[in-house]
Image 1 (tube, rainbow over the protein chains, first blue to last red):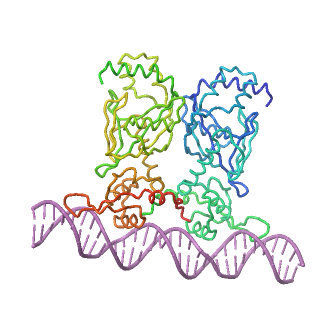
Image 2 (cartoon, helix red, strand yellow):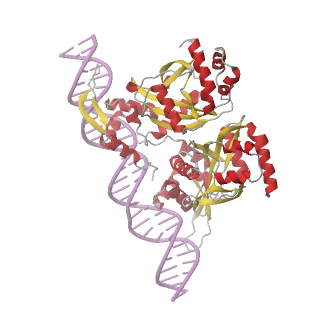
Image 3 (cartoon, helix red, strand yellow):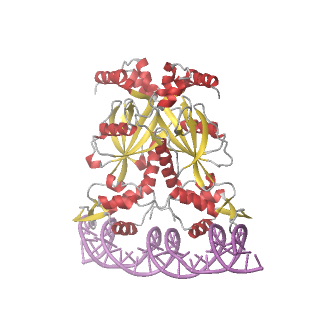
Length: 260
Length: 260
DNA sequence: AAGTATTGCGTATTTTTTACGCAAAGCTAA
DNA sequence: TTAGCTTTGCGTAAAAAATACGCAATACTT
């Protein structure tokens, strides 16, 4: 997008959209996917910014916050039916639009008074999404000029407290692994047990004996064998499975194990 | 408080305080305590309101949201060192100050224009607190005229979505029981195993064999026997214990059990 | 002194988790 | 062709945790 077109869009946003929105409150999305045996998070590159940022958005006055999060997610990924969970709200008093990005906006020739709406302190509601890497088609947002899927175990520098957001989202993912269909939402439709195993090791952040993992998953009856193998070079071919969604849901709805 | 004094206070709040605060964003606290073998939640009675409400508050522009929650909690309970956890943010577009309370405010002779700040849509950040019933000294707030500790299992009608807030807080409490020192924060300093057991049954919402509960807790080493009994009529006297806080903390910090 | 209710302590069984051996399958290199 | 390497798939055994439940001790009531 060229400078002039950007200026027009930003000016329009500040002139007509912001007045329909809740001030000082935003939504940040931590969008996870699983690709090449790694857990990835979608990041955007802000205009004139070195550091990357999470996709963000605002809330219309007549809009439910969950709906706003879904809308933002759709704008950013093109996806309609997304697994989305609120995980935490962040409200340090120093949460402002990054300085460099402020300068970039103003240097477009935007009315500073209008831009003030953006430059106030913002409290942000964090959501995490689980998406299928293959089906996702990321799009940069108004204030960004590119995107990237980054490995959660090797994140580049992020703006503001976005690093903390990702970490908190990961903690939540860890807690939710027994109660949410995380495998179903992150893995491709057809997957192997080793892939599933790898995903668990990343999320739980520890080694899990692969033979015990396999046994437990097979006994739980949530896997439907496809009688096909995945083509991989160098060794025995792993079997492909898909989830029995009903059985998966059932195995999750069971009471949280509490030691009693 | 008489009408005139209330009018003055509300007018002052709207004139001088609201302009230092984040608009359309509030904090609601679900304050739990344990008393007479029941889990209680602190509720306030709004002026002219039939239904009860949770203690609420607002956030100053230069204030961390967690700090704001603590401040509100202190104002409402007099407690300084409180266990407080954010659990969810609620944002239906129809979250407004209750109609009857709006009328009550306006009937004081408050400038309607000023009062509009209060009557906007509000998104609210939910926190839950665990307090020691004995040490708590609840105080009604600006817009309320009384308080009550109500049994979570038998709640009276609440305003807006406050019922949902309590339920979500309870769900969170259930999830947190293995990772947070819930017994320590809710039980009196000296307590019996049957009390602890009762608390667990209420939070987990199911029967737990009392003999297995006792065995597990004693083996976990978090209980220090006091060599005293609690005086209760009608049967054998239960032993009193206090928590070994370090051991309790240690038993919680352990990895979440995930079945692997 | 008998009856009732609750606490404290113990044993036995079942279920779940953990540890780990080993053959099968597919590729590579000699 | 075959030996070697790697990863997958399947199995057994031991350890740990959860569950079920019997029963005596204590304190009050009648």
